[in-house]
Length: 411
Image (tube, rainbow, N blue to C red; front, side, top):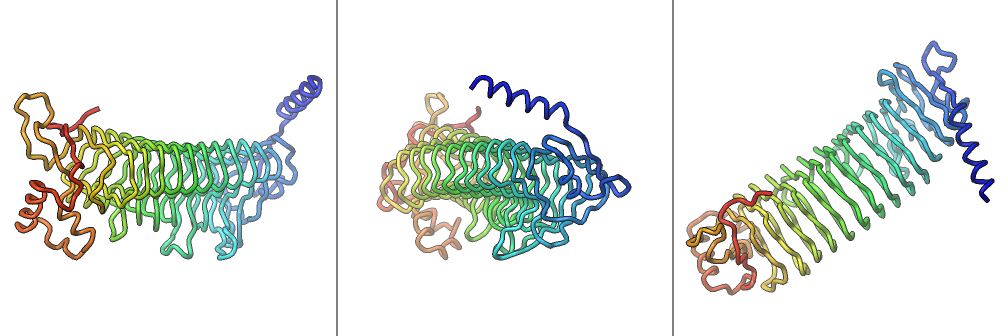
């Protein structure tokens, strides 16, 4: 067994040391990417020089590195898929890929990775696409520093910018994704990191994931999308220091949580969204150090949400801070800052001397009769909110922040 391992190691080292570099250009011995792939041996490098190469259905079926020099263009001429990776250890770097075919029976992609490991896709520009980068049943990959710009107008005839399906251990970092259906989409994809991406101006979601566990989302911006982020049917998700802004619409929100358990939502900013976070059937979630500013609703709880904690968050100038559709509460609010809190602090310890009740009767009414929103900020609404605060009947009487902060929380 040891001899076999040594033999395989020697073979891999020998392959690496004998790897060749093949050049592709209009005046080179090799004038097409397909010809270079055909001639290349495992672990060779293909350098594609500046120019436009009208090719599609390029299959990387062996370990290869392809590097674009001065951003050469691979034009698929709308004929179908452009690049497919079916081997481990493939790197694509520095290309511009455009004109992916459109089909309603096949999800054509600019780059598809199938059952592969240790892949890298970086510094690539994708334009005029159906799907951008599509990863299926693959692992241990990197998607870095790419620019994916579609021209999607409707959901039904557009694809996603970056899509993962049944994949794991994939890094998605420093990408720009715009004008597609969903900027980034994950399904059955675990232990992935999505970091420092800009996903904006997309038709449906900036980020959409389902049945995906143990993923980390950090430092991303989701802005001006149909809706910001939809997090559904997943466990142990960590969402840190993201920005959700300008997601406006009758059914829009910064983040949707549906059937999410044991997650952490820490250090995020939600501002200028119709709803900051829309929550349904989600339990044991820690909300901490988040800023909710100038949203219609900062948080809307639709039911079946238990044992969640909201600590040291800032609720700043939202039309409604918290909306509940039940008069039963099993969640904890403690040491948050509420810009509409009017209590006092006689002992000067930085904590209000009287609890704050964040759920107003009017938010309860609007939940049931949306048309009543036209009465917002009327004197009549101030009167009924004051009455409910004095003697709660319709809102949860135990939903209180017993230690409201007098100044904005800092961390």
